[in-house]
Length: 566
Ligand code: ATP
Ligand code: MG
Image 1: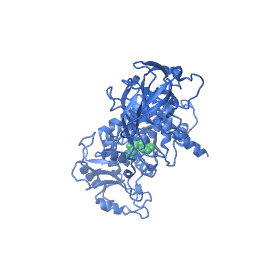
Image 2: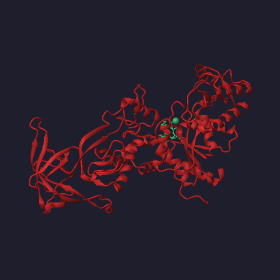
Image 3: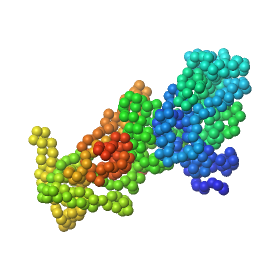
């Protein structure tokens, strides 16, 4: 078809949209939206919805709005509005001039409500909250009509106007749709459309004291904006008949097609703004952007790149059935990108001092090191070598077990880009017995780490020069939760009971090569043999470098796949 990029339909949503384009529904146009409620920071689940909505608009040459569904004055805040915009932009998407707020439609929504009342489709109900609940019935029993259901339209209009004017206390009256109290879909049992809330709103101030409910607002906001495809998560499937009921009774220009897909769940974390907010409030994390959080701001601070998150979202695709995606897949998507582009450096997390006895004091050599073996274009750098070095404590073992090939008494290993060294003597703290220093010799003929006479060593270690290296703080992260699916459970346990008490380990005496002086916050490196690390966006400074371990080098995803293939 002219004007449509030809590509194979890749999921049921795109198939549906392509069908609508082909049949010229909505004149063949595609308008989507991402509609967050500004009551918290966005998480990786939202990224799935953002990639889907903005991605579809891009693919079909349509547009995608960013609309804040801001109908609940007490839970929302401009802090969230600003962070959401920053996160969507960071992910690489642009709403152009399509920035909207449901609160901008409050007057229009009020007029729509009046119209429903006039047409006999809505009424003011004055039942108490308790009575309303008991009248509602249950999943197995029909509800009962409210005694106010047949109030004359004029009385309803009068009351509704006085609700708006602030004459009543919260809870005195609500506006309800007049649908069917016996419907097997509970959403259709005369749902509330408006309630009284004497609360200031972050955008409309104290202009309103009645607020439209989410369901009423959401479908009409979509219609007002001319959204053709209203893509949402599965839990809204049972709300669709209500949305259609509202849209069929009002003179809207466009009746959006709702399409539901399964929300993203990830192992070892949670995906609910309410619960994430609790972690922040109760101090289990340092904030919404704590690098352990599945929020976009947390992932960004952890070192995740927008590209890796977009690739992850492409990879998981969309489905109609809820499932839990392995966190290892998200990590895999990041590693894949960082392997290509992160410069390699050497850093030692837990330093063990090594003195090269036969290396001259006061001598320094500048050795060549590759910046990225995956990409020769990234060139080389100089790394200083001297008589006193640091290696990783765990790369030495005084009494090595069979499969330990790293440094041990009398054993020779290669120092990456440097020399072969042999451990001659182990120095211990006389009080604690702890190994505090190794005395080694080096082979001057092995410069650059090449074998002098064809003799082989079984391992290559990373290292830094003690006098040249920089002391840094390193933060090692583990899963926030111990349980793969940390939901509240039937035995009364809360998700908070599954928090991993060891999700953060802070090391204060890490050492990195001197080239990292002045490393820019947010920049990413591979510490050879250890993983990918990024300079913390908040706490790092030139005087005190702080590195977050973004992800280790261990590809657990490959293992999971191999297991599944068996
Ligand atoms: P939360 O429970 O985290 O508050 P929500 O659905 O209430 O989530 P909204 O601000 O209403 O949050 O979400 C904005 C959009 O993001 C909605 O269209 C919603 O369907 C979608 N979304 C939210 N969570 C997920 C998820 N885990 N996977 C995919 N899409 C999601
Ligand atoms: Mg919500």
